[in-house]
Image 1 (cartoon, rainbow, N blue to C red):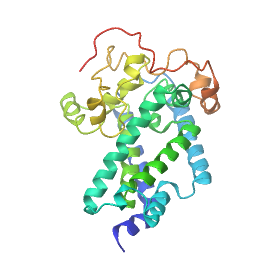
Image 2: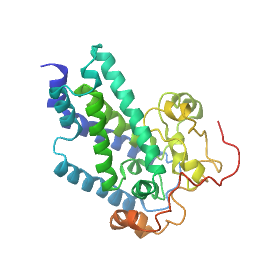
Image 3: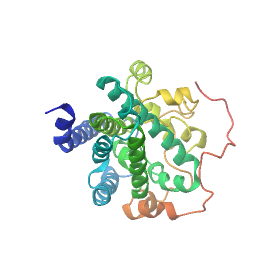
Image 4: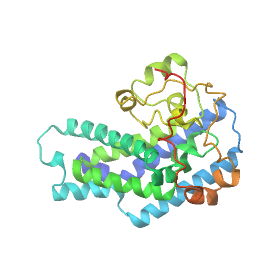
Length: 287
């Protein structure tokens, strides 16, 4: 059995193992040494945030039974994608695929902040008034479906090895939980790590209520894109303990912390209520 077939055979076990392993480790870390005090009950947040995750999984499985791995297998069988037309070492194809797919996720993240109707979906993620491991998986169902379609298109054009798709999905989900963690790394370690991966302090800036801070640090796994395209911000102006998490004017607990409210949130407010094009802030950028 080659590596692609081996990964396909145990894909669900691999993904579930990493998901619950990272979720459990981060939850324990947050319990022992939280970075910030929560403003909403942890029980309320976990039940509703993870309830949204379960709902999304069920709907995705109904719409896309084989998900991205099935798409990767289909693309390989059809010979679709750039990497199926060029002869490069398997290891290089895997690494290149993971990096390229991460770049697409960065672009997608910028897009959902830039396009008004997509921001309405994405603000479900940002409207969480607290920031912890469950925030990393809290996305509106319609945004999850859109993200899956973008991944399908990327796989069809790129033609990545099946194992690369599984690695990418595992790394993306694990990093999303890690960098949304309500935890603190030693400053020296954080300073080094954020050259290679997105740390909790780096990503927390992105969840600020301040528009210029929310429109920075878009990376989920690799931090290079933010530095390369000028969207990197080192620290929040108010500091991590005093910064306000969430979205201005969306502070009603029933709307931002209960599952029915989260599902309804994209349809609340005016169509012009999005963030990336509001450039009225002042003050120098931090490097």
